Image 1: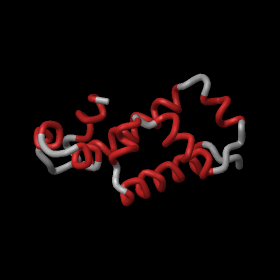
Image 2: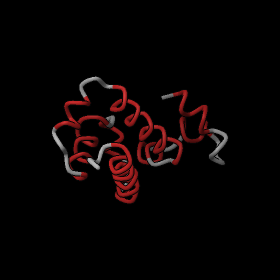
Image 3: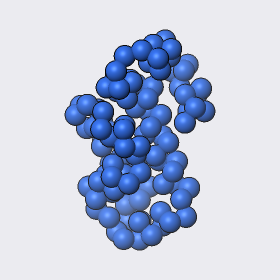
Length: 105
């Protein structure tokens, strides 16, 4: 998680201390840095998980893959506190990942 932050700090124009130490859970989990970090962390988790081959072999539809990610992979507090708009953004990124990496061609 933290290594992704290190890579992102140059990309986002924000004071990381304000995000980490100030504000509410909603502000924290909806910050651009945290959104990207939790997304990347989840993608790494499924991409390196030996059992994930089982999930792919179940021939999930794109929406089933998204549901699986939100229910089984993402950190529960992240799912609880992200806004509807950010959930749509994450869903779009998951769909892109699905079609580029998992869809049967």
